Length: 325
Image (cartoon, rainbow, N blue to C red):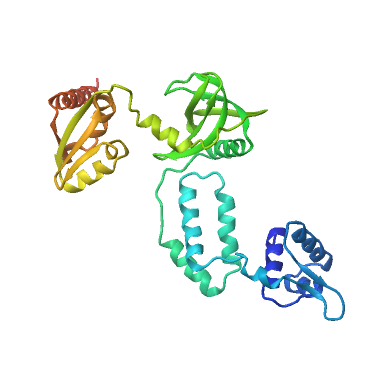
């Protein structure tokens, strides 16, 4: 076992309340007595209150109150950790290996019955998600560490779908996982304002050695959502009435763009209040994705916009149907 596993095993043995000598611990773990002494010293240095009694009946023990320390997890907590590891792995969480090791340790120190129960629950939850590239996992690790240590980063960033990259210096404030993508939110030195950047568009990343001060109470999540749900001063709003099958409307009303604008809901009809400029661009694109499962009843201008978009798509793909010479 690794050093960490052996140290945890020593705690487990001492937590039973029985006084153990170094020799007994060494025999139980199949390690050298001198190694036990080193691990005991390391545990004491980390703050574990191990009591060392000398003499004929001496040995190592833990204070009675230490028995209440959360060295173990109850069955529901174990299940939650196992499920969290599944979600984290599929979302491209950069420290998935560490989380998997934690779950492995749960199983290592569990009884046969507990291991079987944990395996049953772990098999019951699966997540389907496009796998994250290994390079992105490395970037996420760098970004997370820089965020925690408040270090300014230098990055080559690809704008849009072009091939041109631009060097940016950013103070990373936080990472956000949104709509199956990772974003880093931070202060951009080039633009002199807080911006969000897609991690999958970062082509190179390096530390600068400089430190910054993160704004107090700043939320990367709230910043990103605010940028997606802009509400410009003096904006005009349109009332959008949509009819359709109940399940399709349920999906539409739970969409992040429409959920915030829902004004009224009936089984086969929904009413929204949406800012006009975004409605005729972003909103129209989202509505087309629902096909004939829904129908926009009003406003008339939106119906015209949807018809125009559908026509443009038809012409775009019609060329591919022509026979080739």
